[in-house]
Amino acid sequence: ASVNFHRRFDLEEIARNFRSAEYEPEVFPGLVFRMEESSVAFLLFVEGEGVCVGAKSEEEIKEGINRIEETIG
Image 1: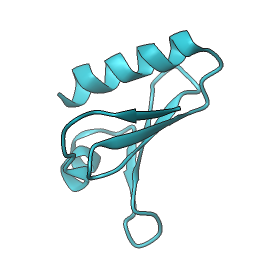
Image 2: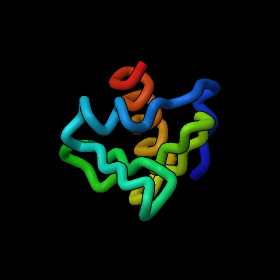
Image 3: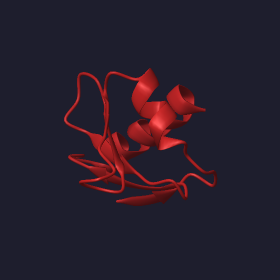
Image 4: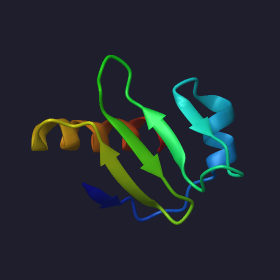
């Protein structure tokens, strides 16, 4: 599922501040942000776009979006 967070992300800062974030711009332009205790992860891009992967239901997607917004701001 795709989502627009309506803000820009500083992917380098997110990667520095969260253990659950992986960012290797020379390999892939997005940041992988894994939800703890879940199979859900988000691919986040600088423009504010995100892609949810690993969710098994719409509810998991919504919970993941809420957690991203609460965690990253």
